[in-house]
Length: 393
Ligand SMILES: NC(=O)c1ccc[n+]([C@@H]2O[C@H](COP(=O)([O-])OP(=O)(O)OC[C@H]3O[C@@H](n4cnc5c(N)ncnc54)[C@H](O)[C@@H]3O)[C@@H](O)[C@H]2O)c1
Ligand SMILES: O=C(O)[C@H](O)CO
Image 1 (cartoon, rainbow, N blue to C red):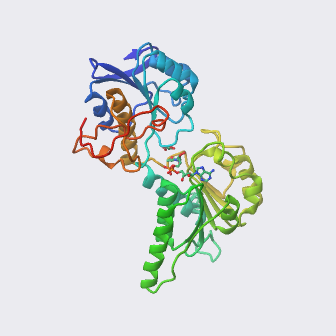
Image 2 (tube, rainbow, N blue to C red):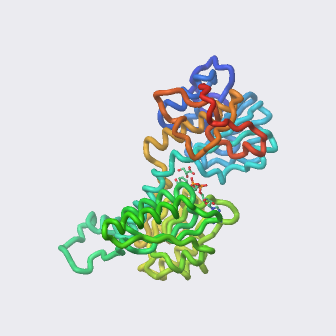
């Protein structure tokens, strides 16, 4: 059905309030999360990858209670003013990162901003691990070589790469995903870890200490952790560096020309956070000048584009922002985003622990009567669930 110029699909047409999703999202649990509480759901099915601000204004229309949007959209003053004018009070990104959202503008308009933490942690960490292995062991280069019919037989020096076992892993941003990735690499490859974060990660430190003790009981060399006082310390010491911070003004171009020059000549740099955390032009120059340096990138500074020269370089593996792309995770992201909006529409409190969102994802039982994760809950003075309430939607 065409509405306001853009094609939409409607669920529960007689619902008491109107919620718009700017994209079709995986699974059906998210649609039920909204229709079960009486929402009419309109899903934009227009064949256009990234909707413009004008497109979204037309979807919001003159009456809209809440919107679920995507990280590719520019959720700033214009859209929040339009949503407020249409009577809306809830917006959720279908993403944990929300650097595309002007949270202050939303707060000024009294609009709650939701995100989807936790459900992408392991999936994203696994892709970072895949990029690490692909870059360190030159998997894509070797695959290209095979497909081009260039393989003439085993050679001692064919596609020699880096061994990970026992090397030093560097983590910048040791939050949920950084810690999950570190655990995979430490358990999988017995790597030592050095990390930099604004906050101490006792979870990571305790894990490494306990795992080191376990290895000793097995007669193996233990692993160690170190908390760095600067990103520079990590860059100088680590053999593999993976970036997992949020994107804000403190992390914009955190990896620049000067900091790249501190890294080991044969280091591996992985980014599955946000593109602008790396000055991509400087990275292209660094990769050209240092053929033994390798990178694995899921995200790019000017998505969907790559900086000139990157695509031609053999020492980088590039994938199109797919780190959270497992079926369970994408369906879970959609469900959490829908429950953020549904919960706000119903006037529910905010879940007390956004790091424990499992109760919202169990299809066999009703989700808790709470919004799973609202990033401006405090600024809006929203009530926080005490977690004991077993009220159901
Ligand atoms: N590529 C993808 O598909 C994908 C998927 C999921 C998340 N992400 C990105 O990963 C980010 C992290 O997700 P998360 O769930 O682990 O979030 P999180 O909040 O648990 O972790 C982020 C960490 O970054 C740290 N940090 C903030 N500023 C920093 C700075 N200046 N220097 C060093 N560390 C700093 C924080 O203290 C925190 O520990 C998201 O914000 C998102 O942008 C990308
Ligand atoms: O921030 C996020 O959730 C991701 O980038 C989605 O893949």
